[in-house]
Length: 419
Ligand SMILES: [Zn+2]
Image (tube, rainbow, N blue to C red; front, side):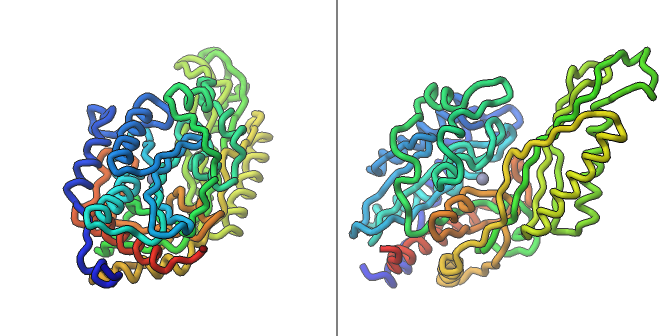
């Protein structure tokens, strides 16, 4: 079959796509409907086991690397460098069924479709599921792809600890996914990731597809404020070193900073922990997690430097000691223009509109972009809701995204660069 007739005839099996998404979502689903497969928990293991069973059903060659990334390879007609289709299957604690899982399962469905039609692609295809993309328990996020791309040393990643002091490497062994393959052993000629937008742009504009051409920079900081524990009933207000009050000022500052710097600057304090956390004790310690994002590196640096100035002044004014630790720092990323064009052309062959866009969220694709040409396909998230059980994409858009992925992968395979 030639490439033109392939394009006309092939389309993915949406029944398998939907039922597989549902089967994965059922693992440890919470009473409120949310998916909870936090990286390196028992639920993550169950999700991985299911994924591996699907890969084996497709006769993929399954490899697990030393950080637990799962790679399933489907051989092509030539011994060329592979095309990798990747994403992740871990979730936040209150996740939806699509974030990450959609891209991995659609990748499998692309291979299923080719096999069903007896089509062998020119290049090998690899479906990758990266460890700990969400970074809720162990930081940094996008860890598996970051280690894969050589941006974080394996030992450091394996030694990272969660809040209870549990070591990542031990958890990886416990769930049976401490693999032996070297991270990054397989360098693809192209990496492509299909993902829900997790934002409102496509949904609001009524456009069913996005070709993601860049991704904003992210700076994660942990801010620890040391005050002094004291009696809530006997300590005069003027004599307190109240870590919670200082924390509240940091939270207010984050919002003011973003508003002052304009629409593209975002600032979020998503986590606050007070110690000892009792009603009648002035807190001695507050630990905050701050997330800063901007598509321009210079602006992101400006936000970071304004934060430093603010914390210095606050420390003096409130008489508290403030420590700041960078949890993650990723510069903005520009994706590969040729893959972006291929995605647009694939949408065109289906007669569907597509818009170029910037990703507001971090994705494994940004790490893979360090070692190979990479880009992403987005489908709309209704109302932009994500990291929430209400996360939803219309079934027709899920099918369309997977078909654009299929056509893009075939086109990239036939282009065959990076031999
Ligand atoms: Zn994701």
